[in-house]
Amino acid sequence: MRVYNFAAGPSTLPLEVLERAKAEFLDFAGTGMSVTEISHRDKAYEQVVKGAEALVRELLGVPDDYAVIFVQGGASTQFAAVPLNLMHSGSADYIVTGNFAKKAWQEGQIYGAAHKIGDSSDKKYAYIPDLNALNYTEGADYVHITSNNTIFGSRYAEFPKCAAPLVADMSSEIFSRRINVADFGVIYAGAQKNLAPAGVTIVIAKRSLIGEPLKICPTMLKWKVQDENGSLYNTPPAFSIYMAWLVLENLKAKGGVKAMEEVNNYKAQLLYDFIDNSKLYKNNVERPYRSVMNVPFVTDSEELDAKFIAEAKKAGLVSLKGHRIVGGMRASIYNAMPVDGVKALIEFMKKFESENA
Ligand SMILES: *Cc1c(COP(=O)(O)O)cnc(C)c1O
Image (cartoon, rainbow, N blue to C red; front, side, top):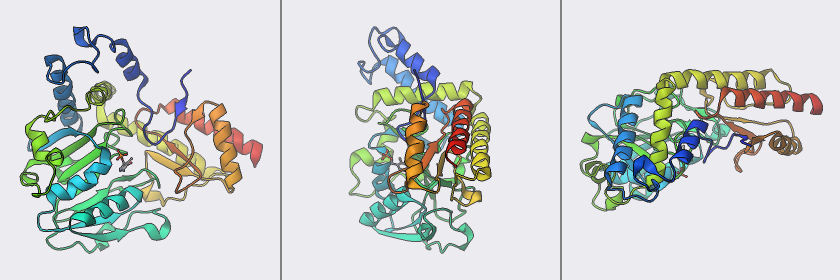
């Protein structure tokens, strides 16, 4: 029996994709081998990497002068790769709007002057700072943001308009909303939130920015090298890329990013409306910045929160516990969470409220 899985990452994947992967697991594309067994240089595998790249380009409208590469080490490794590829003059700006944003900023400090030009920790990261009031550093190599804050449940409604190239960690929202890739210098995202199993990270980078990584940049972290080798410089995370390919095909069949964005907005609206109208539950993020992907909420007591999580689990609604640094509950409602899953959660919340108010 499948449950509704609200985990923040690794997270739920489309059922059709899991079924297809299961059906062709023992014999991929007539090779008589599993996709986990064939060489990454095999013709049959080439269609996977090339197919996944083509779908990323098509679904996000990536301009031709941008590289699209699949790398390893998770988004956290990209916290280092960003300065190692881009920090030529030794300075960059960071907007710190959550835990991962802070980690990216801290990693940046290893390589140069990483200026924190915005910080919303004063209100527990419940908002995004006013982007027009920020003091952008003249001559900075880039401005780094985290577009959706997975733990605190906030997101950028709009993106900064700055002179330096904008670098965005989109791990927990890529493919959930339309974006104009040309507005960004670099976009990166770990796959395990909204795309695929853990193990692969997507980097989309404007080629004119990545030609000269710092001398100390490890070869494996050079985006240029990965681009020149079609993400096959070394053995790639073959199964995760294959799963990403299937998820992207599935997304295309469902109408692409625009159609998905509409469903996502609808799901989030249902849940936030219910929370805002209830007496028991609260979401503390300022409205213009509320995440469409991660919805944290609390009752008025930690005991009740714990009871909620335990009873929800029995009702087949799992992984609703909030991140350990926030507490309470968090419903991650990524692309693969069906509307029916959100409706089932709301029904459960209603019932729990009537029994415990
Ligand atoms: C999960 C997450 C990360 C960390 O990803 P790893 O793949 O575990 O390194 C970084 N940034 C954001 C926004 C995330 O949601």
